[in-house]
Amino acid sequence: MVRSTDVLVIGGGATGVGVARDLALRGVDVTLVERSGLAGGTTGRSHGLLHSGARYAETDPEGATECLAENRILRSIAGACVRETGGYFVQLDADDPDYFDEKRAACRDLGIDVETVGSDALREAVPGVTDRAERAMHVPDGVIYPSRLVAATAADAREHGATIHTYAPVEDLHVGGGRVTGATVGGDAAGRFEATAVVNAAGAWAESCAELAGVDVPMRPTRGVMVAVDYPDLEPVLNRCRPPADGDIVVPHDREAVLGTTSVAVDDPDDDPREEWEVERVREECAAMLPAVADAPVGRTYWGVRPLYDPDEAARDGRGVSRDFFLLDHAADGVDGFVSVVGGKLTTHRAMAEATADLVCRRLGTDAPCRTATEPLTAAADPDRLAELVAEFDACAPADGVSE
Image (tube, rainbow, N blue to C red):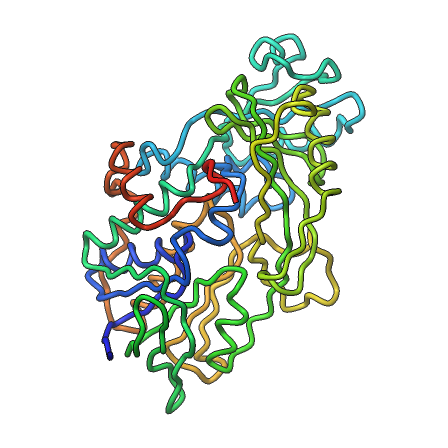
């Protein structure tokens, strides 16, 4: 069977469905294919943090500013797909006070709302926080429900004319005359797709996807564990106020707290052995902020693989690779019409999709503006409808309570 579309998007995580939605709202004929259910990769295996930008304020002000802007947009358009919990960066007795001061000053410089609280006020706001806490800063962090967000975005894309295929793995990309012409797809959408443009939004699998078109996209995926424990008493996000390290964040998800995370380089995102030491380390480190999580019953553990792009990967370790996103136009590699979008964060997926759609539309000669920052997502205000969409797209992610 042969199908035709203007743009074929490969990958059904947050960025891929975001690209499909953005293009559909601009009137572009777009088809998305995903090898499993939606949110089956990195998106669904995150800790679900809605970044305020505070985590990156002193080291990456541009990225922090983008996080803050997208935080505000998602709170405006995504309804019950996000939750406004607030967050704290907690300084313990062993942490460098200069680091706290530097982060606070950077947040203020960038316009991130930040309020310093003493240990007594912190314990009142966060019952159970450690006695070792000396002070904290309150920031506008929040929580994302990845399953809901991806399902609602896909439904919105479909409502505006996009076609969404799950369980439809790409088996080959077709290149001829110096440009991409389509793909062979298996599974539930088996057949040939002819396309004017193809977007590689395969996340940690972007390298193997690009290889199908004879293009090199060097990735440096890193594995991280999340440990979900039974802990219904936490309302805000807790971040350890120190340089990024293992076990420095606790994210509330309904009656659970998700503890994260580690950073271990892997060669193949599909071959990531799970190590018990990672689980133990994360619990121990997070318990330094919230002691009760050390003994709280574990609901599940799950690992995610970060889609980090690193053309100089041989010279770096996992935490040194950029978390920024990169938009690669492979016309420079001799394959016109083929674009890869890699890296980034769940919080900034919409901005990544907008940049990608802008590039694709320029290539197609379409000048329709982006509308995704102002138009609410389909069903975003209706939790029951969101649950139906999650089931329909099989977007059931471990981050949202589904055991592996």
